[in-house]
Length: 218
Image (cartoon, rainbow, N blue to C red; front, top):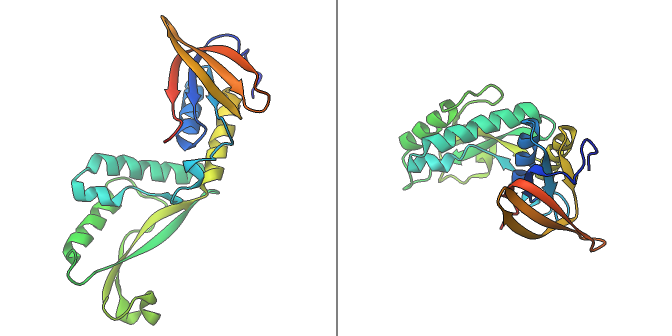
């Protein structure tokens, strides 16, 4: 917990949930100059954020639904997180074979062409076509698959990425409350009165916040 200001005075923002969403919101709020608190009832990244696919991706499948805005934003974030945390996020190449009777090669190539170009791409290699017959052992595919495309996304150490965001939020002045649960929340005319509970001791205390963010997960 930081000691820059007293937690007895009202917070601008209190974020509940120490996964990647809560940690990222707390970091952004603190970086914007807001007095911020982050509550996590267990360990940071103890839930979904340490049980993820470990992928940092742009949502390739959403191109099929023409959600270009979502894909563009996701690809931009992928590039940003590679720049900000190169020690926690690494390029990863994926092989997508052309399945007989499945989507035609031209459609897959068009989608991957868009995927490469919807947002700036400085650190990742672009899509390449692959003749599986010319690759040793067909890259593990049987003879049914003759062509494939190789494209880029990223792999991440998800739990460490959460912790890095929590540390950065603390360095920006956020109050960090590990093993602290939100016991009760009551809306007030000018915000919220929150009762928080120390999980280990059972002690409770009240704090005030102008904005309450629920990032507690499922």
